[in-house]
Length: 193
Ligand SMILES: O=P(O)(O)OC[C@H]1O[C@H](O)[C@H](O)[C@@H](O)[C@@H]1O
Ligand SMILES: [Fe+2]
Image 1: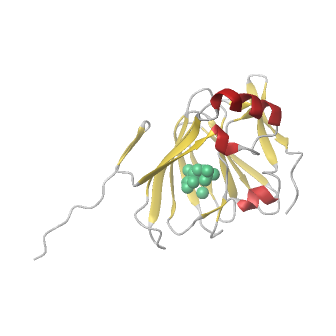
Image 2: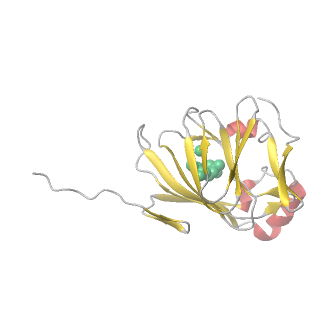
Image 3: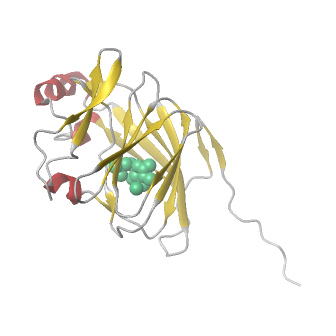
């Protein structure tokens, strides 16, 4: 008889993740070119270049097909000019790989886009699950004044392709402040792919 072995376990709370295998952070200085208002970005860089805008804690058992990566993404509140804090965004390198995001805290958007430039959004509030279908570019946007915290899960062999957004001059729509609320506006730098 073989001795039972204890498998990996995770403890996930809105404040963090115990049992993670990795973490990465994106600081303001890493986000050049993302926001429309370059003057506002440069002004903030002067004092906040090292400020962490978002970080991801994850449990990545492997990068093999069949495995799953689970993690928590924490996106700070704030704006660059009128535009809300957001992640860089990507499409999966294997484009048909999907992803689930479950909002744990805060208020935001899962901003998605098809290859032919159709925008799809899911507004995130605690408890909302956003599904990223196959072949959808996706990024998170924080519309609130507290951290946007999401639990995500996606296939371990998905990978991330950032070039798809860079080549089209960003995503088609930007999330900007509108009075006390928000709206989507056309990204003037967008080039159809
Ligand atoms: O990859 P970014 O656009 O920088 O976003 C950061 C992260 O967001 C998500 O939560 C994904 O599931 C991560 O795999 C991703 O890397
Ligand atoms: Fe993803």
